[in-house]
Length: 275
Ligand code: ADP
Image (cartoon, rainbow, N blue to C red):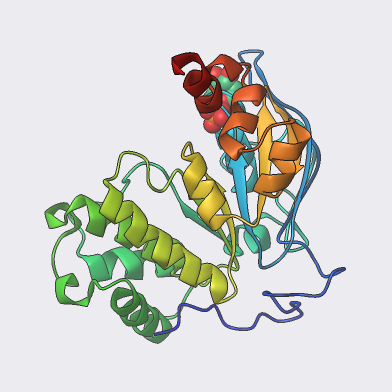
């Protein structure tokens, strides 16, 4: 069953959209300083085309969560602008937020709600009508192979099912832009591969995706564009091949190691030392 969001009023085509259409995310000169004095974002500009599967990679503390929080209204930008499908994330928060589905790192489910209630409450929060919520929940439970569990409480699910439910919840209000914040952190290989299949399908059906991950293979497998963020700044952007070229290496992993100043860890170097 299709996961695809409905056509949006005044919206451009989402997948394979012609160049010049409204980007899913347009961040311009974004700065964010926390009251502690930490400057987490130092003038970030980033554009994610509608329909793309975009990876944001960087070491811990680079500013990835802050960027996501500013985009979803959990943090207030200090300066600069963020537009989600053309809606300003601060001055037109409601429209911008409705366009975004967020699957957070934490398994932040209400353990006492059933799966169906989890989706229904989320839809209600986003202003969906009862009949629509029921239909959409059924559609997503089916798409994520959770229908048999719909009346069970979330705390009875396996880790893999919880991850799927979090994805379904993020998609409930038919966002056109899905943010996946380390969706496969700490999950086993088979669940990772399964989740990849689900998110690939969501993207193929037209939803733009921003993925943060520490798994470079994941970014390579899924993303058509990747940006490196370091110390609050976007330092490189392109395909995995572009990034390798930019750093004068042959793999995304080696490019990343150059980014974080740890090229001595390169497998190529380690291989040579052993030989
Ligand atoms: P990442 O998600 O890439 O690990 P973060 O956006 O979490 O990076 O953090 C960027 C910087 O901002 C870090 O130095 C972090 O300690 C700091 N930071 C993040 N959240 C807060 C906060 N709520 N208050 C103060 N400093 C924060």
